[in-house]
Length: 175
Ligand code: IMP
Ligand code: MG
Image (cartoon, rainbow, N blue to C red; front, side, top):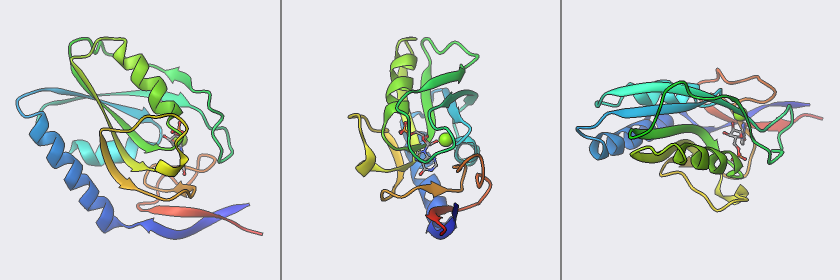
């Protein structure tokens, strides 16, 4: 059994992370239109917060992938459950992820979206666990690096739960 433990990233830090990333995006994409693609379900909270700080036109779409079952370890196999609806050819795309862990999901999605010829493709992730990386890949805009702990809240779940917690918490084993 698991339960929610201490706060790892509080509201203040989340707010600063959102400002830092949106400042960069607003500068780099000035005068352009962005297609933001959120990776459901985890990125939903982060994307909703981030996109409201972006001051260039944003078109949003979502895709759904799955790699975790009900456990805390990745299977390494990424499954596309729902693809995006819009054609990204010739467009400036930012893929929005909740967290980069092993990197399997990011690698799969980057290859897939790249093959559709966007004008540019960047990846933005709220959280990053660099120690856990199994493939050599990183997000272009990284919010907060965190240690190798299983975390929940701010969109991230354990067995479908805790996504609604407003801050990031460590999940701990209960005896
Ligand atoms: P990766 O493919 O191993 O990089 O993992 C990608 C996805 O696994 C993330 O986008 C999360 O949805 C999920 N994930 C990885 N670590 C955690 C965690 O600590 N808590 C909740 N979900 C996680
Ligand atoms: Mg997930």
